[in-house]
Every structure is written in C-alpha cells, then in structure tokens.
Amino acid sequence: MSGRFARDDEVAAWREDGWVLLEGLVDADEIDAAAEDLRYVFPLPEKFHADPERYRPPGRTDADLRRGYPEMPTTGPAFRPEQHRFRGEFPFYGSGLLTRLTVHPKIVDFMERALDSTDLRVYQAQVSAKYTGDANFEQPMHTDRNHSFLPPNMVSPWWHVESFLYLTDVAEDTAPTHLVRRGDAVGRSTNRIFMPDNDPQLYASERAAIGRRGSLLAYRPDVFHRGVDLTRLGGHRFLLNVSYKVAGSDWVGFHSVQSNATHPSWTQFVESATPRELELFGFPPPGHPVWTESLVNETGEKYPKLDLEPWRRALLR
Ligand SMILES: [Fe+2]
Image 1 (cartoon, rainbow, N blue to C red):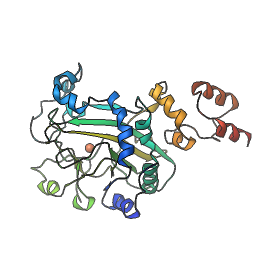
Image 2: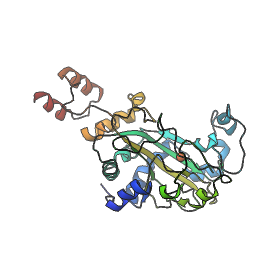
Image 3: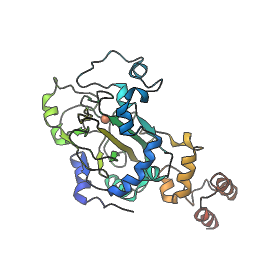
Image 4: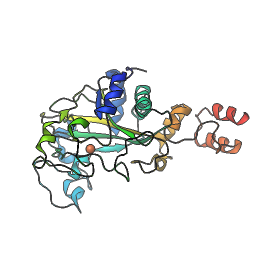
C-alpha cells in the first residue's frame, strides 16, 4: 500500500487550525489506478467538454435540480443545486480500487490519530466531479450543517472529520476549496452563513487548499469554508469525499451503506476486506454477540468469497 503517514504536526494542525492539507498522503500511481473506476460514474472530461448538454440527463438539468428552490443569483456566492449534479455514492462499480480508497490505511491512520480512537465509522463516502462551465460553483462561507442534527461539538469522543481525497491535481484554477483557520474565524456562529458584504474580513482570511492528486484535505465540521469556481478552460476536478466519526454518535451521519447491501460492488468490497475494514462500516467484528454459527453460515451464503475463519474462530472461544 502506497503513500505516507501523516506527521504529528499535521494531526495537531487539524485539531488547532481546524483544517490541514496532507500533501501526497496516497501515491499518485495508486490514485490513477483507482480513478479508472470513475468512468462508470462521470463523463470523461474530454467527452464532457465536447458536448456538455449531452451529459445533463432528465432530472439533472439546472431547471430540474432547482425545482422548489427560490430564485438565486447566477453570479456571486450561492448554494446552487446544480453544483452537486455529478456525484456518486459508495460503493463504486469497476475494479474495486476506488471503493477501497475509503479505507486506505494512511487515511484510517490519520482518522484514528485525529479522533484519538480506533472505534470509528465511515459515515460519508461519495465521489464528486466538477467541470469548468457546467455550473457556477462559487459558494458563500459556511460550515457543513448537513452532517449532524446538532451544531458541531468538537469534544472527544463526539467530534468527526470531513475529508476530500484528491483524485485529480487541484490547482488555483480547478476549484480548490477555500478555508479559514479557526483562529481567524473567532466569534462567528456556525449556524450562520456569511456573504462577502457582511464579513469581508472572513473572506480575506481564506486560503486555497491546493494539492496534487493523492493529497487529503481534512477539516473539522466547525471550519468555515466554501467552494469556488473553476476557471481553467476545459478543466475538471474529481475527488473522493470520505468522512469519519467515532462510533455511537447517531446524530452525525450522511450516507446509509445498508441500502446498498445487495449492490454487487458492496459484495466485491466485503469479499476483499479485512474484519477491521468492515467494522469501519458497522459490520459486526468477530466476537460480537450478534454472531451464532447459523448466522455465520448464512453470511457465508451471502458473501461466498468472504473468509469467515476469523468469525468462526471467535465463536469457539
Ligand atoms: Fe461545505
């Protein structure tokens, strides 16, 4: 497995500044191999730019996506539904390499150290794509209020980490997320969004999270940030959005993987995963009281290539 471990000062930066860009956490070669699976989710950039209209299927046009939303400006910062037109939820079709990036050892190691726990859950896993000209991607300054029923509570063990693994190089002109260090946002309520006119100082403090593919942008849910537009002609940006929490915070969540339990790519993932990797999705580990001999056998029928030996051994103890 490629890449490097996060340094202690990077973990500390996530806690103190609220965000950190872990440059090259995963090697570019490994990203490129996994990114082959994106062809099942997103149009190839060359094809998209040759005929963007072709890639706006019914229900995904601006008008369809905006139905029910109030009128919004076409310029300047706004949350436009079409900004999220291209996304795909875990698990992903193909080789399985893209799916497996969600539990990449270097990412799991960072999450364990940031959250000071090994009892973790992946609560958000999706890929997203942006293409120059497809939408105006500029957003106002906000915190992600759609990850929890509650305002952020950044106290162990209730805290969580949001992250973007870059699947393409993210440069100044391909929409690097802009973020503000916690120290530069003192006094702002995380229940609010801020427009440039009402808090120019907050905007002046933002920094662009530029990094090559394989870099991980990790940020706290109380960090102010915003998406910006792509300006590169024919540009695109692909990333894997993967967020972790400590097990037990039912009020924090985003995706439910159980609804994909019959998806062939979930079966493929289960059959390639270790008990530890499965536990990150809430799959009961060997020794959990739910297991009986008959449940292990039925689970073997559901996932024929999963090696259930660790679960069987634990039953004998
Ligand atoms: Fe956000």
